[in-house]
Image (cartoon, rainbow, N blue to C red; front, side, top):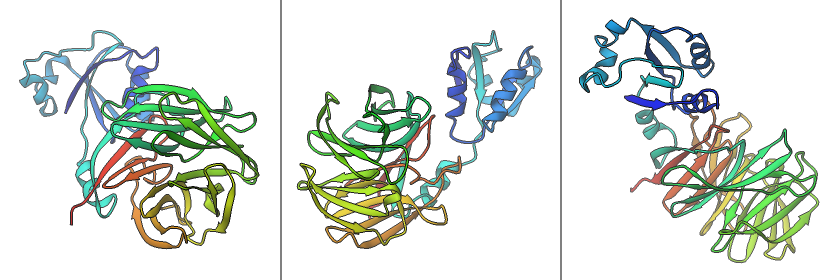
Length: 331
């Protein structure tokens, strides 16, 4: 595959582009001076750089697509113009059959915008809401992305005093429900109800525990604390209905109510990932599907998960982040 891009490296655009490549790649460029910085950059990201004689580049087999297209791209003119020839193993084909039993990976979407340390995701139609945290600045974020292009559409800060760690989120017809906690277990949280369109807070209530993920049903909110050792059930006004210890041994990072089940994704004690289907309201485990890792060696259920009907989206990786979009297999 030949990708031609004009990249600005002083502003970090080049580094972000190369980091987003979905598998270890090889970059072939015409020999030119001052490319050691570029070689170091690619090596840091797990890629390989080869520089060749300009007169011979067109004859190399890997450059056949470029030369067959009329040699329209000839050389590095300056540090802003790079030709990256990416050589990938058939990872996507492997992923189709191995990542998640019962689901087909339809595509991988790069999120074009800051995502920091990702937390939760939910979606409807072609819009996704994503939460993330920047520990250095002690800020949490709710961002809106297009599922068509991956472009970021909106971003708001959502911290509440000492609470700046958002978690797994859930959307209903009009709102996005977001837990925002202190960045430590056994602490405090608020659960915010924000308008899906304006992203403004409409209602919130405070809790004496770190709530790391929430799901919403027509009547209730279901939350998991740090690593979801306990579940809480509240009504939509924040009144506690019950608290129950989890017996699944899965450190859930995101929850969704996909009727009639509560679907929960997280990490098992052996650091592998799994998605669980729980009976509601008992919260007993009914079914577990183990997941694989991305080619960056991150479990697919490391962070965000959203499922609605036959559509599943996983958000496992910090910036530069990607969405792994699945469809349920037809039996």
